[in-house]
Image (cartoon, rainbow, N blue to C red):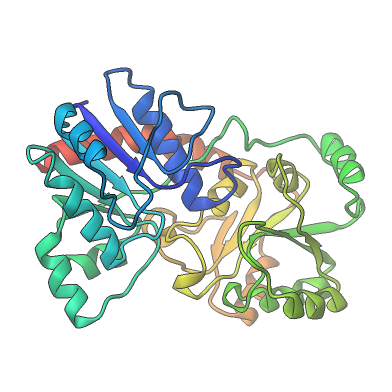
Length: 347
């Protein structure tokens, strides 16, 4: 790979949220190529040595920072903004690119953003050489602004998120103080109206325990939480170091989100659940549909009625094949190898 400079604002520990996980995996991949690539971030991470600090201001203005990147003279300038593709993100990248003029500029869009008329005009002028997006819908939007887009999936740590045996699952449920003799429907994410969690209530009448593992990074809607707890939902709101254990204890994973502002464009939890070989029910959210088609174990739903109907079609007594799908397409190395190959081919 060409000499690469990566700017990623947040890979701080714990790496416990989708956009942060993506940034961390990209930084680790680039650092692991061992060809003198440089990683700049606002935070350190013990897993990635020699991270250099980004300036602590909105446009990354720092004479010493500009001198360093100018002397490094990268061939690729890669930026993963934690705010995704806001106008300010394009301005930051344009500012940095003034000091590495020979570099091809790559920006990542990890969550959908919309822009007003003036912002669109500015973005069309400040555009990077390539914008990496996670859905065909996002590609179409930015192509109308004159940007060249590359559509890419995300990856998953299949060594960490793996299937366990039935006896191991029973023991794990006991240790985690989860119901042992019932089916568990899991969702991992934030507690707010935008996540559409209320739609899962019908699963309780079908004999499921609905378990929600909530992110500690975002403020929760405590009124919504209280209302759902009265119905019978179980909430796990402490920081969970081994989040894979909650997938492993579950029977199905449900991703009910409709609002584009409420999740990463390709929700990482869907692949994490598949990697643990769970059956998955999901809305046609963001980039999921761009890369995954329906199977016996992976189904889309539009509303509560369709969720209730389709969930009964899962052949729960036969072997699920979702982990095989993940292993064949969604390892991080495979995702990034293909992505940077496509960037080279795009010129």
